[in-house]
Image 1: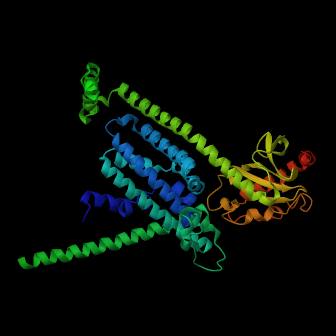
Image 2: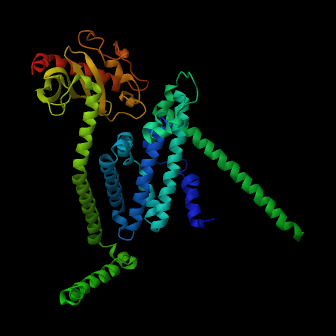
Image 3: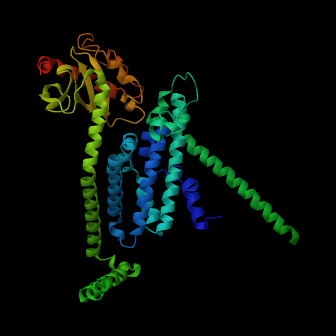
Length: 233
Length: 239
């Protein structure tokens, strides 16, 4: 494969094993606030992705400079400044996109996952690894947001990716689906408590898949062990 | 010329100083050297202050350099939303240039004063439009714009910006639902004060599933906006 083992491990951690939401249970505040629809989840995920990569890169670049005692205020400063920069620049130069994503950008400041990655990974690892970690963690986060948004949207309104063309442009109109026609609507799922409940189901699903994989892996090692021990008998 | 410049003593001196600076920085930024510095209180203070300075400098520069562009974008947005609430065939003047400022403190629609944009056809006022605000939205102010014809009928209302909950309260936006279009044609004459409310409060207008405060406060602000127009109707139409 093209990727080294370290990079593969970082990717697996970010996307699945140590996923921000599924495993670290971080970033629940912006998560529950915006995942009413899959489109909103995607918007929030993409905006977070950009900021987490930039934050990881900056923190890793300056990691030798930052003393342990003042690292948290420095990280907060870096992330808050970065989010504000993105906010201002997008407002000025990508105004159409800003009108759609603008709502989410301010919410990124409250995202503890970015601070978490700065603290747990970027402050100890080289720049390249940190950027890759930011990308993978951000992608993992985006995937969860879209999955949770889709699950909530289908169960609350019967649609999928409603208003996606506002976010991605008219060419993505085909994404807008009505999954259940004439659906009466289930309000709870659109509200934050519904987000909690649906997130619970998703996490249970993830754990079940993990357990199945572990059982399978254990079975294969046993088999392998049998094969190895047999000739000796 | 180039050879002269390269051989001049000032150039040589400059190169030496630059090389010294680079060597010093290189030695200073060695991880081992920084590791020695990090436990010192003065270094910690310096780093924190340095990052704070750098961040404020970057933010200041970005703010200054984007301010003009953002203002321009906002003006374009305003022009577009004015065009949505006042049809083009109702006026032949530039709305943004033809304005009058009126006191509006008593109507609680945002500010002490409200700028009213006048739509004229051949010099005569055909309609007016103005920005107004529901200061008490669910999560902050909801900024709207509305157009009113000579007789006090609403031509249209649009939300310019707001901070309501994405997915719930943002149905007040024209491109997310058709709720905001329902106000066209209503006036203080054909809609009674009781009817200027959401259905939950006995009024005429829909609330949203999961978000009642946003539409309630929007309806109330639109009602107050019309009252503001009525109070100044005579003055505006003779302008």
